[in-house]
Length: 143
Image 1: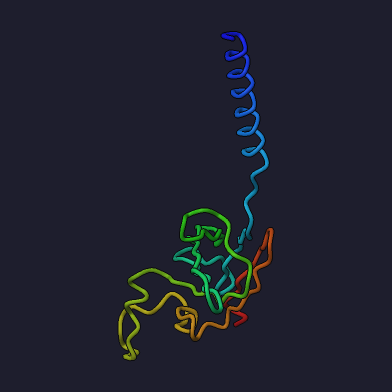
Image 2: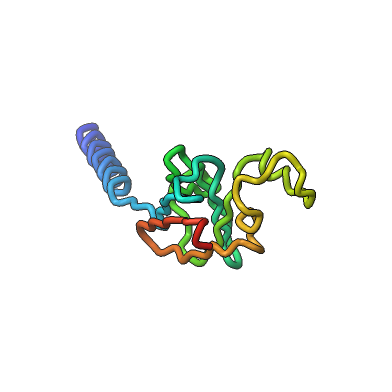
């Protein structure tokens, strides 16, 4: 009887380990990876954040712009995959530039990019994010 209990425990342990290995090996992330590059005035834009706001329901995603103009979006859970769908992109170029939104042309600090790119309601940057890899070149000179 003691041998059969030990044998049963071993089988159960092996079965549980096999289930754990199979489930961890088969797990795949779903969603879209979004990368790209921001250019402005003919060169890589090297500061700020790119925000993607979904049309309709969903959460915004963001990516810090690197010195070479590249970015990769992260979801609110700080992982790399976002939901596929239609998005409007916004370029946030730092607090000092955003705070400079004054109508006075003599105001000493001018925004790093035109104001239209800093709001989801005015941004012309519209993208369709598809399942898998997405690479978007955001050329602010062409907008």
